[in-house]
Figure (cartoon, rainbow over the protein chains, first blue to last red):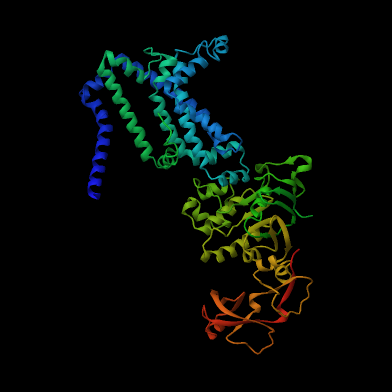
Length: 274
Length: 326
């Protein structure tokens, strides 16, 4: 019986692996590699690549710049309502991206919550590149914040206290002690958030639309090219596979990152993620 | 006027820490059981823990609740050696020492750290880590030095050596120094005065010799290593005490024999030998309710064995009586 079970389990593992890997392989097998590279040269793919890189870079920089000090304050702070705050931060993670897109629309859109105020100062967001940046930042920031908060939480408080008794002012405690010690976890969180933002589809489509060269990012281009030129859609898919492999390898191979990922991905294993 | 003067009131979970203390350019050790508030006291002085009361150092006020003054930690001139040392793991020895103040080359030399300057803390032994922690704390030339259990993180076999060196380094530092420890022997070695802290209050403050010679209560006596015996059974003593009292006798005043001896000792307790622990050239033996310290020679001559029987004897003149607390 024991052997029969072991055999069955091995078959199950092989089946699961094939189920996950085969579709990814199929992306590359349908069209010869040369044609894939060629298909990336179409204007739709090139435009989408530029839009994606530009919006992702700006959104990610903003998330790191604002998110890192925010995560430090939340991670090291002891205040009432902290658990509630953490849950609120994670809320966008469990929302379907389409809901996030509508939420952004009714907040920053022309008729939205802040639309009037933005309109008054001459800012129109929806269906512009700025809207893409907002959508990407909105979906990736909870992922970064959650990882960064966990990283700052895991820094030994005695080290921060030690820095204070050595006359370090708050910024120096942050920059010289907390930041370097949390760096591994921050790097891992940053990579995961970047990957999530790069692949963002639903929120971008609803809030920013899919206008080639303006708001059409790579995932949107896959959808748009699907009916026009399947080769281009497949080529973009291949780009995502390569990018995903790079991110995962980085998470596994960069020493500081490895430890931090296991630190908090398990904690979040039960929540649906991107 | 003593450089460090404090009068603190810190509410803790189970009791309040209330301590008044004046420390000159000397080393004062605070001993007590864990949870007595020793670490809290150090953290309050360093400004890492909110407290009420007053702290003044060389006439400068760090804390004065009545005036609404409470300097943050980074504005107090204090060096704190943390339990487990809290060295920055990502910085070299030199960077650790220079964190509070740069360009103090002599310090690495004085603490025998020059050869280790580029090593990371994880590559160091316990004794070396302690020297880095102390050098780092002293680098900004703090007005007050605080050490939290500086010997607790060390192996038993390096402890004695490190303790002797620490004693020298603390004397050389020549500034108000508070050392927290749970070990009376460490306290007696490092400090000129020892304070016994129990449940947030200073029970007794004096030189190690004073604490041994006249402990204020049974707890202080047992902390200094004395046997504390209830006087339910008859114990002869030349001392006087009122009310319920306990008898205090130090291990080195207790002699051991195989059978009831015919000597001048007036107190005898026969019992089973429960443990034998060699301490240097002496043996610490537990016989019934008593701890006796005898030479290794006499332990051998008496053929002491765990589980065997022995008679512990001590003189009436070596037996002090202490009134039980209220």
